[in-house]
Structures are given as structure tokens and as C-alpha cells.
Length: 229
Image 1 (cartoon, helix red, strand yellow):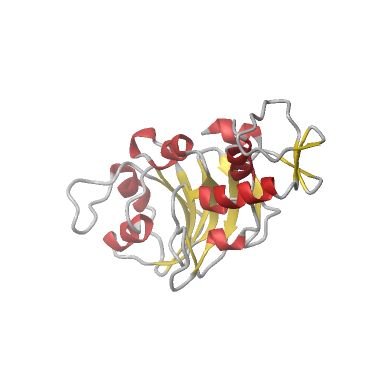
Image 2 (cartoon, rainbow, N blue to C red):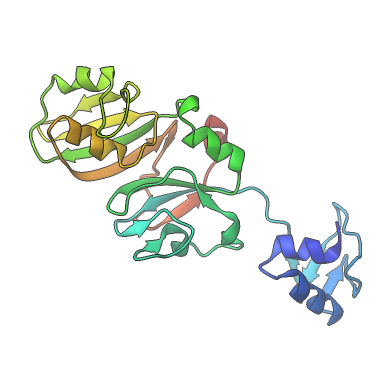
């Protein structure tokens, strides 16, 4: 790989800035100053800028505990993007795998791997998302079967995929769905004459929200968590 490209893929520098840094003599390869942007970097080449070693940023897999009043978008709009909460290099290469509404909290998965995120978001992959729900009205036990059979959402044809509803108490339940329709959980409860007061995502597939993460905090996924999708 060319030295200037290596620097671009390892830092926030553009190609033109990378060439400028190289020409200034700030870059060393295996301890030697290299001023040629076309210099070929090999797998075992140690590249440093001003004495600090840099490495290519590979695929990244992250979980975040999303706080309320943040959005799952790559840009800040009326509310702050969850990506804005991260102090991380090359944040522009990351995207959110499955969005949450601005007032919903809980597990958000963030990655640079498009194929991996497709396994989460595609309805064909049946990747379950589990939510903790607080409802405005008391929960009828008969809803367990209703959700399992699928629900007709307003302005949509057909039924939702079967969903698992586990009632905890009169106003709280856990719901696992394998789709990601617009405002789906809220619309499902609205369709049965109820309303979601609070919504929190606990898990995506086998990946559980880390109990040690406070709202707004994040960490990289473990190898086992990545492989579970």
C-alpha cells in the first residue's frame, strides 16, 4: 500500500495533508525518514508520525447505551447524534446497525462492517431485538397470543411477524421482535389500544446491553459478541 494511503486509512488526514506531512519529514518507516508518498508499506512496516506509531483502522464493532434525546443518525439535526458522543478516530466510517427513536434508550450497535449490520437489520435474518416496555394502560394477558399471531399496523398490509411478549407486571413487559418497521413497537401497542410510555432496548440477537455502561457510554464488542450475529 502507498504510504500516503496508509496514513489516510490510519488517521483523520486527507490525502493532500498526508502528502504534506510526508514531505515535511515527519514520517518514518522502520525508523527511517521517508519523504516519498508512493513508498510501499508492507505488512511488517512500522510507520510513525512524529514518533507515534500509526496503524490501519480495521473493522470496528461497538455497543452504546443510548441516552434519551439523542438520534441514531450520522449527523446532528435537532438532537445530537449518538456518534457525537464518541471520541474515536475516523468516526465518519461508522454507521448505526438498527436505529432507536429519539426518546428510546438502550442498546445501539455501531459498526464499519456493512455485511455484519445487514444481518441485524434485514427482516430475512430474523435477528431478534428485545425491548423493556412501560405501558400507559394495564396489559391484558391475552396480548401474549395476539402478539404471537402478528398485528395489523395502520397503513400497512398484512401482519407483523410473530413477536414474543412476556408480561412482567400490570404495566411492564418485554417484547422481542425480528423486524424493524418505523416506530414498530409503539405502533404495535397503539394497534391494540395501548400506548408505550417508556421504551428501552435490552438486547439485539445474543448481544445484551452491558450493565456496566451508563447512558452515553460505549465499548468495543468482544469477539464472541461479534461472532454471535
